[in-house]
Amino acid sequence: MTERRTDAQRRHDPTVRGFASDNYAGVHPEVLAAIAQANGGHQVAYGEDQYTEHLQRVIRSHFGQTAEAFPVFNGTGANVVALQAMTDRWGAVICAESAHIHVDECGAPERVGGLKLLTVPTEDGKLTPELIDRQAYGWDDEHRAMPQVVSITQNTELGTVYTPDEVRAICEHAHERNMLVHLDGSRIANAAASLDVPMRAFTNAVGVDVLSLGGTKNGALFGEAVVVINPDAVRAMKHVRKMSMQLASKMRFISAQFEALLARDLWLRNARHANTMAKRLAAGVRTVDGVEILYPVQANAVFARLPHDVTERLQKRYRFYFWDEAAGDVRWMCSFDTTVEDVDGLVEALREEMRR
Ligand SMILES: Cc1ncc(COP(=O)(O)O)c(C=O)c1O
View 1 (cartoon, helix red, strand yellow):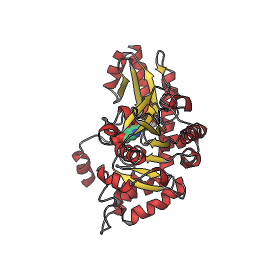
View 2 (cartoon, protein in one colour; view 1 turned 135 degrees about the horizontal axis):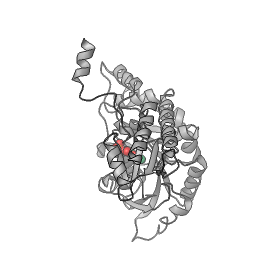
View 3 (cartoon, helix red, strand yellow; view 1 turned 180 degrees about the horizontal axis):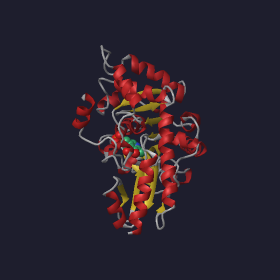
View 4 (cartoon, helix red, strand yellow; view 1 turned 90 degrees about the vertical axis):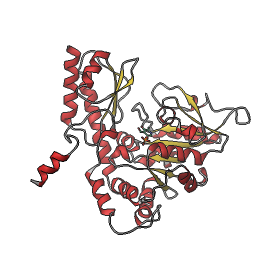
């Protein structure tokens, strides 16, 4: 009776899932349990709590002995805090034209961080040393913002994944030119699952200096962290975080979530599942005549080109977004709670709409 009343009071149907974003998913039950477990009693505010202290040990087990985590509220905040702490006032950040920091953060790196972004067009969302060189010049030229950081995204906004060797080549190239490397790891777990390597294999082991570590898309309620791998790469991290409005007073609840994800293998289970669902979706979509898959499906995203009328009808059945409306490109995202039935349902709906 109590159960039925609770269900009736819900504002949504918890059995309905779409493919719009991995942020549409809820919270993994193990994370929710960790939040509940961290509740009760008093803990020192602003990060001096037992959970944040323990998180540092967990972070070091993943990203090496020099690593330190600075939990923040969201991914945009992690990127803006990290990049500010890595640059001078006259500094610039080289990134892909498709980078989240460039296209999806409402100009926060520029307006809040005061940063100049130097963008490079890419085929598949990935920078290379050659592409970086299109913007890496003019350090002595006072007319130009000084390139001080290369920012890459793993996995990329287009669902592609850098190999550890590719990241190593970028880090060597950047460091030889006195630049630092920032990695936007909003979906770092999906990249590690896809490569079947630990996260360190393409971060601290190959020279990444600072990481924006994702939690939300991996099953957290909210919360990301700046992980400083190379302490010499940043200045005044704690001050920059506070000044950027990213210092959580009740930090224990962000740290407890990261501990739930990272202390054992929940991060990997969740990411593997989402990636497997995306692979299944891509395989299904390939059986539908007339639909083109746009990029290698290496993580939890599938991009495809569809006729407009098909997209519009399909969107009435499943939530997903246009990626590039003019071109007819759409993006389907899978998450830790996407089911086989969800995927097969979307494929069959797509088949029906393509036949109409
Ligand atoms: C690559 C990437 N970086 C960062 C973010 C963080 O965004 P938010 O500020 O919404 O947490 C996202 C979210 O979509 C993302 O896809």
